[in-house]
Length: 154
Image (tube, rainbow, N blue to C red; front, side, top):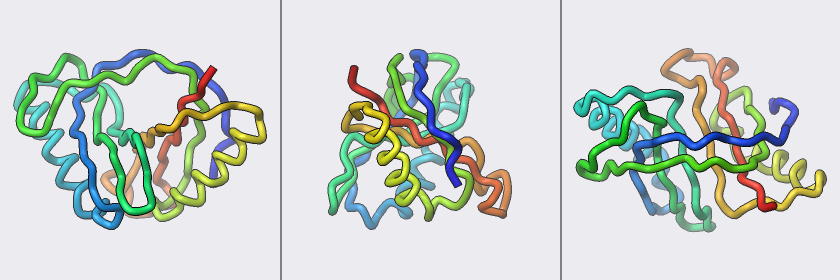
């Protein structure tokens, strides 16, 4: 189930990120270890997350994905291994929240993009997913919440 989409403005936030370009079918093999690596590095540097983790997809081709796993942070991260400093820019976005399992993300994005286009907005090529509540909080996927965030042009 999706919340009613809306348009909003994001604020600039410091982030720590790991950039990945992978075959599409490898997503379940890299997300968990990548997130663990990211959180281990920021903790080792004494940096606190200031919000839920996210992914930022630059491209989602049929055979591969080019994206970052990231987390907003309280201070700039020092590059270590694959972890680099980043920034979530201030931007105009369309936003909604998926209530449910990650398996529903593809259909949710389709519905969300239909709303964006029907509303007369011009979407940018990239997109964000912010994992507000997930399996770490509840074993029931009905309790999971994922923000879908689509930058807009103009």
